[in-house]
Length: 330
Image 1: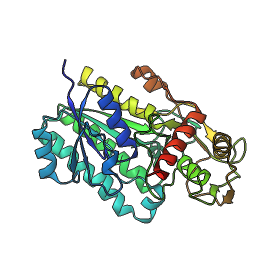
Image 2 (image 1 turned 180 degrees about the horizontal axis):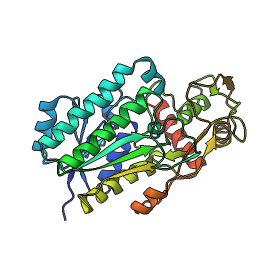
Image 3 (image 1 turned 30 degrees about the horizontal axis):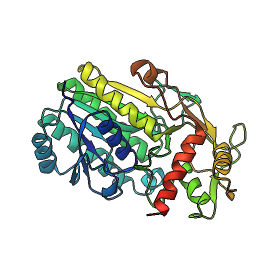
């Protein structure tokens, strides 16, 4: 059976480029659209078709969907920096919510049957429970989380009104890089802890800020569930298969390992893997940061035949470090 072509928005970005690799490696044909505002043309595997453009350019989107006979969209395009969303909320509602609405309308107009959405644990806000299930109330505390939740709600409504199913994957803390060194986190000024730490270990930053050491956790620093980006990409391939297999069923699933590491534990591991002692500076807590945020991943494990293959913290760091050194070499 011929596998369908998958239309990937934001496929030149960090997570999107890994998903493109996973799809291509699994035998799917891929069409990528990216406006290259934060993505990189070189990050798109040459086996994929590349279109430079924006997801709210409805003429371009609809022409592309029809030309390439697309039946499946995988949507990563958007803005992702939480503090920036607080400073510039209208940017996030435009790039994440309004643009997603345009893309979904184009999908309906072109008869797209399946849609996979890159969502986030930020939809939960600061939950009362440490281990978060999909039933945990969604009470986002910043425009980034709200903009993503609005898109989830649009997808749910569209699925009720049209022959269309979707999977919203709520990511926890994504880290690492392709183990084969084909792509990785390349954004300048990235805010992800693991990226910041390996930049410090390779001399690109002078120190790593720890935002709060007085949380009610085992060492006072915040605890997060870190998932290797290649395991996350593999989950997207399973989502494709699940939507095709049961075209009337929709899914909203957490993507994490179900275990957490504190900021201090992550930095200790980076010191160990790199054999470099990173300077750490304690800064005040950031508004809205929960003490601990860990995925209950039992639903995705029960729904997909997904088995994490890269869930060692040391491997996540080693892959991130290898990519950082590759970037240094140009």
